[in-house]
Picture 1: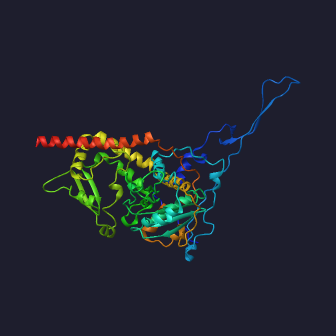
Picture 2: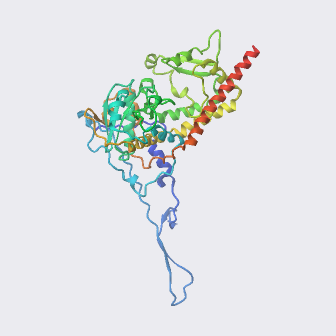
Picture 3: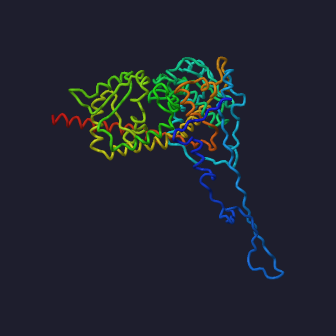
Length: 480
């Protein structure tokens, strides 16, 4: 049997993190039981009888008994080591995962009281179009499969894949790897389900093609990494949380640690906007026109990356942690919006505003950083996956079955034959075993008024920035 150990990434494994935050064997716990110090000074439980009050002769003696339960030994951590002997026959272990995990079901196990971050409420919004109609097998098999790369069926905690088309690089592989790690983290907790997944960037199912009403045709349910206001997608965490080997983007837990170091360099940053990437899309090609030249300085320093050269040189110029400072949700709160069709002037104003409002700019960066490190930690990535899959499964109007051309996948079938960075990232991001805490609790859905207010607030923030930008350029014209 071949075993692999996770390399140290400088950050605790999610299950270890959860345990250190809640378990008495790590932090200690308050008890209402009687204890005494033994001769060595150790605190030990005791059982004693106490006589209450003075006891004259022939009087009744009332005994009060105080007992202390001996603390239970902490349950041994269950681990699922990678067993590559099964891969010789291209099969998954017969007893791969238990159908239930005792410490999660036991009354003494630490139950979560944590409410999921507010963005989890978007799960309800993504699934709203199927709330009345439900999801039928026809929607999945005959329509959504046209736009997808693979079909995933989970039955009794085991995963089966039917492949339709190869995804770009290893997006599909690492997406499937991430789902398998979710099954290792919460064995027996996911319901049976059947879905199709697209790994392409551009959403293709337009909202306008599917009107609402009693006779409306329900749209195909398609999982993907991103969505837009005018398209329909069930958004799912992208593959790079478990690593993107082709461009040396490390698994997310290690990236978070490296990003912390980058956050500390705010006061040392240059007074320009920086970007590195490949100009594959029209927007990115337009962006490169904003680079510094002999005639114009828009305040941007833009660099194209040759990924073939980067691979040959060991990715020395493409360390993501030294470039990225934020992801976010709300403009002016987590990030600064840039116009899509007037990028150069928009970037110039953003740089000028940031340099003239250093504290406000730093507040945006710190808020975004807090969002990344608190609301986007890997525990919540897995919990988001768990909840979106569970809510999706509730909408199925049929019992999932294994497709005729599907094959079973497990960590062994994906990792045992992997090599290089692909294998290294899989080993680093592999969930060793079940966590001893439950997923976070879902917040309630947005009520219609609150949802409209959220969208209006976002739109108003963008409009305000555009107004400031217009005034800035108007003043520049006057002075020139």
